[in-house]
Length: 170
Image (cartoon, rainbow, N blue to C red):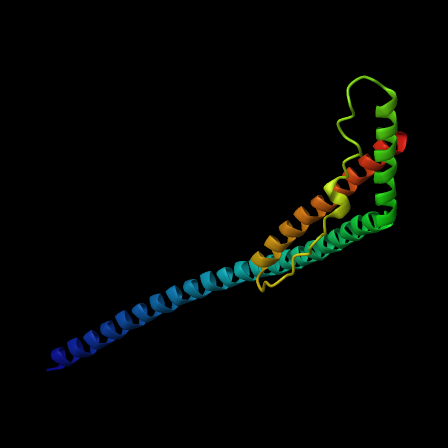
């Protein structure tokens, strides 16, 4: 009977040792998983911080583009406003009268244009696109629109200046 009792107690001790070994391995695996999750959280925190800084940079760029666009629009409007309708009409009348008087003195081909053609930039109105977005993608898209509008304004200013230089020489 002692033999059976010792074998039962030995079996129980071996079973407890096996159970203890399984628990130790489970705890070790959980610690490894916990360490991997901690590293993932650290990496994701770094990515989130980087994305936040990029978002701030994008916002700063958008504000800068908006400011440049407003300045370009204001310059274009000032140039357009600086030439009054009376000046435009007077230049047109003078050019027409000059062309008519010169064409009557010369017996060659008649003058094909009686007055200089005003560039469309003199009379076209500049509209500003309003911002209705709520995401960074909308902000980026609006920045592209503002850049395009700024380029249009600068192009109009260049055409007006070219026209002024060209007609100041005549």
